[in-house]
Structures are given as structure tokens and as C-alpha cells.
Amino acid sequence: MDQILSDFVERTRLAARALADFAGHLFNPTVRLGVTGLSRAGKTVFITALVHGLARGGRFPVFSALARGRIARAHLAPQPDDAVPRFEYENHVKALVEERIWPDSTRQISELRLVIEYQSESGHMRELALDLIDYPGEWLLDLPLLGKSYEDWARESLALSRDGPRAALAAPWHAYLATLDPCGKADEPAAMAAAQRYTAYLRACRDERYALSLLPPGRFLMPGDLAGSPALTFAPLDLAADAVSPDGSLWAMMRRRFESYKDVVVRPFFRDHFARLDRQIVLVDVLAALNAGPAAVRDLERALGSILGCFEVGRKTLLSTLFAPRVDKILFAATKADHLHHSSHDRLEAILTRMVERAAAGAKFAGAEADVIALAAVRATREAEVKRGGDELPAIVGVPAAGEQAAGQVFDGEREIALFPGDLPAYPERVFAQGPDGFKGIAGVPHEEAAFRFLRFRPPRIVPAMDGLPSLPHIRFDRALEFLIGDQLQ
Ligand SMILES: Nc1nc2c(ncn2[C@@H]2O[C@H](COP(=O)(O)OP(=O)(O)OP(=O)(O)O)[C@@H](O)[C@H]2O)c(=O)[nH]1
Ligand SMILES: [Mg+2]
Image (cartoon, rainbow, N blue to C red; front, side, top):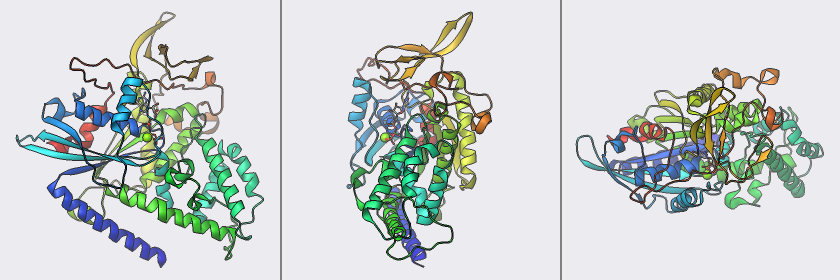
């Protein structure tokens, strides 16, 4: 009953907010664009490149409003939500262009409003406000928790932690868990120790070598302003199937904290951000999973599946806009396509298509326009043909980030190299095979034996244009913009 009531209250709040947003949009056309993605997927770089490209006029031949000269100006404006910090656009661009370093992992939510002044196809001057929100990717994995009880979550997390490469990483946490009696008395030090060991296990899974994606709760890895708070002092317990939790037990305490985590942390994040989106781009780092191996690919697919189930995606109607805010266009993008030669870009798209098809099986996309693209928001490499023996191989040229390793070398972040990154398979299904049929990744074999080795590159050296305003090189970024907002600028 409590659950039904709180769902009802939540729905009512969402509807009230949607109504206010709708009225606001009537007078000031606005698109809230959700840039969604797990940690390190490329959200902060994407938003920086988007704002830079529109405000400074990037080279976007496929983005028709800009290519046809209909965009007069795009400028930053005060954001709508006063309580949210501003996205540090200027600092991110300066770091990318002048220092040639990528942004740090995002630790807090931030927001930015870009106002695009354009001439409509009928010749009238109009304005479109584009609201963008950046947040730590880890937090995205909290959304699926909203539909789960503590018991569901504990059982699922434990089963997952016994699977594949996770089992070894979870061993210290499992050993501690075996000493705990869920029905025993609530015990604060035990809860803290369990939460710490569980967090250490999640952190180990995220390591580049394993590149596992399904790691909730998100605040354990990226606590934001909640570091050390009791809301984060819980963890899964090993629960017997038919048991019930006695009052005053460790189990009851963990359950209470899990519920308050959902109430205090997850629900407001969902309500204030995700439930209000108009359009969505889902960024996916497929290449990091391919580096690590088949278990990482499967994990990424599972994580995407659990996230996609949380969004209302479908055709917008007046009623649905008022009562169930929903996304009417969704673009899935494989990021960092500049790590590959262009001959493999279509194959990268094909792999992501298969991945989201399988992941989205349970999600409703009724009537929504969906597409898949491989892109690089900031292109860090260029292409070249390299002679090896009598053959010409398609290579990419760039400066590997300091500390990256390949073929026994450690790179210093200064020297440029030409690299043959390897071909992606012609049949996307191949990368989903598990067990003995699966490909080899660095989670299981030394670097030299891995099927794929995509290095991280430093941001490109950018030569300022004649007017002193540099534009950022990219791959297919304009195609993404056309899909996401092209129709709003007609
Ligand atoms: N070559 C290349 N690398 C990119 C690109 N976009 C992102 N990267 C790499 O991916 C890393 C993560 O990008 P971010 O934009 O910080 O990712 P994020 O999704 O904001 O990550 P969190 O803030 O941790 O959630 C960067 O440090 C770069 O190494 C791109 O377009 N090209
Ligand atoms: Mg970020």
C-alpha cells in the first residue's frame, strides 16, 4: 500500500512538473537533451564539443541549419535550475585545446543552457533553448534500483558477483560476508566493513583491465557530496531464500538504508533530470569493453538493458507530454570512433546495433525515432596507409596518452605514432560469443595476445583558424546533431 501511495505521489509530482515545463516551452521553445552514458563513455567531451561547435561554428556539413547559414548565433544563457552548478564549459575547452588534456571524471551534476538564434525555413528569426546536463556516469546505474526491493538487489548482486571474472575480484568481500549473520543484531561496524569491502570489489571491477559496467549503487564509486554518509553504509547480504528479516537485525538495517538511498538519492535525481528529457543520446564506449574481453561486452549489454528499461520512450502526444514525460527521439552512439580506421566505423555501428537490440528487448520504443551511430566528438587521430612487407595497411596516427602501453612500450604522451588498430569483425555476433568461442581480451590474456588493443590518445593539436577561433575536428558529430535537433531548427 505504501508503495502504491508513494508511486501515486511521485506520478502526480512528475505530471505537475511536466505541466510547468510544457507551459514554459510554449513561450520559450526548449529542448532538454539527455546526454546519457556510463562512466568514461564520453559525456563531458560530447557536451563540450557540442557547445563549442554551435557557439563557434564547427565544420558540420551534415547539420543543415548551420551548413545553410541559418544559425545566426548561439550563446550561453543563465540556466533554468538555480540549485545546480554550471557546467564548466570554458575550463573544459581550454584544457582540451590549450593543454591538450581530457576532462577529469565528473564528480557532480552540472547544467548549461545554450540559446540558438536561427532563421526558420520560412525566413523568421527564432530562438531555441537547448538545456544540457552533465553528471557522473556511475549514477546512471542507480535508476534500475528504483524498481527493486533490498532482497531482489542483494540476491542479484550476489549471483552476479559469483559469475566469470567477478568471482575472483569479489573473493575478499565474499569471505567477509560469510562471517555475517543477516538475522543477527544490527551492528554498525559490521555494516561499515561490509560496505567498504563491497565498494572495493566494485572498484576492482571497473579497472580498465576488466572494464565491467554493471556496478550499482553509483554513489559508492562516486559519492559526490554524500562521502561518508550513513545513506551509503549498506551492502548486499547473503539471504536465505525462505527467511524473513527479524526486527532489529542487520538485515532490517540494511534494508532501511537501501530504501533511504532510493528515496534521498535516486528518486530526486530521476525526477529532476531523467523524467524531464525531450531527446536523448546514449553514449557507449564499446571499444573499452572490446579491449577487456567477452565478459565486459556481456556486462555492458546487461547494464544498457537495465538502464533502457527505466526510460519512457515513445511518440509524443499532447496527453503523454502532460502526464508521462517521454523521449521521442533516441540516438545510440558508439564513442571514440577515432580509435579505428574509417573502414571499421560501419562495423562499430553494427556491433552497437546488435548490443542495444538485445539490451532493449524489454524496453518500449513505441513510435520513438531511434538510430545508431559511431562518432568521435573530438577526433584525436588522423589516418594514413602504412607499408608493412609488401602490403599497405590502414593505420591511424596520433599521440598515445602518457602511460599507455603497447608491444612492450610505455608511451610518454609526446611522441606521435602510427598504429594499426586491427579490424572489427564483419559479423557483429562474433563479439558476443562467450566461453571458449569468445575472443581474447586483456582481462584474460597478456596485452600482446588480445584480439583488440585500442589505445587512449591525447587530444589533437589544433591550429587556430584565420579568425583565431579553432574548431574541433570530429567524426560524424554533425550527423548526430542533425538527428537530435535538426527538426527543431526548421
Ligand atoms: N579519442 C577520443 N577520446 C575520447 C572522446 N571522447 C571521450 N574520450 C576519452 O574518454 C574519456 C572519458 O570521456 P569523458 O567525456 O570524460 O567521459 P564521461 O562520460 O564524462 O565520464 P564520467 O564523467 O566519468 O561519467 C576521455 O578522458 C578521453 O580519454 C573522443 O571523442 N575521442
Ligand atoms: Mg564526465
